[in-house]
Image (cartoon, rainbow, N blue to C red):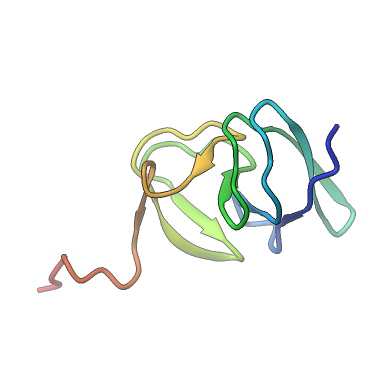
Length: 99
């Protein structure tokens, strides 16, 4: 299992952040407190990018650092890259007007 560093700060999170590039088809261990989560990385994850630590169903919130940062626009498998192709942001959107 590769010893890749990740950032996972809150047990509510369903994504972790890669602190170095993680190649596709690599197994990583995400740690928080005394808990370990084993994740098989599906896509290459670049430094600073997110990956799912567990499956995220379509329309479910994406949680990073204990905060909702968006919603899944399609089902996301554990180990998949989470970015603009499968996440719609909920913060700071200028294209939706609240009435």
